[in-house]
Length: 129
Image 1 (cartoon, rainbow, N blue to C red):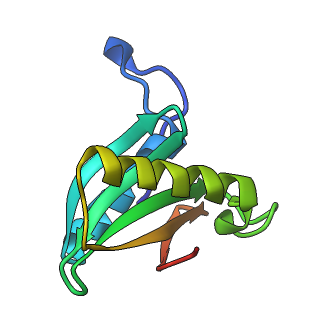
Image 2: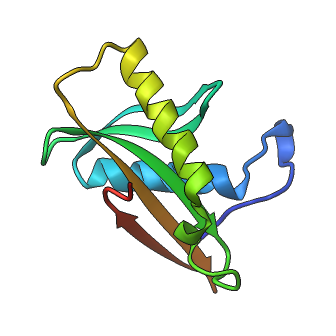
């Protein structure tokens, strides 16, 4: 069963579809053996939803999460255009600079979460750049 809310709940807690999807993506990554380094990294250049370490290939992954309720407008990853990818790339470069990350493999991934008819599908595409 899939539960998400796009409105205010008791106690003033707000859970949006995107936030719900990012939490599901982080849980998926942890179960897949990744170590979450940071969520929702923001800087002047853009935002990165999840930064994680892939133990399998010893790389740092900058992950964009796209959550959709339907495929009416295409696959979620199709919304990552050249401009969005540039923002992610520049933000990742800035992150590596301020954290003095050198000699480490880096990549940009996308996790698509599609929620339709009470079913959830997660698709992880590695190295989209």
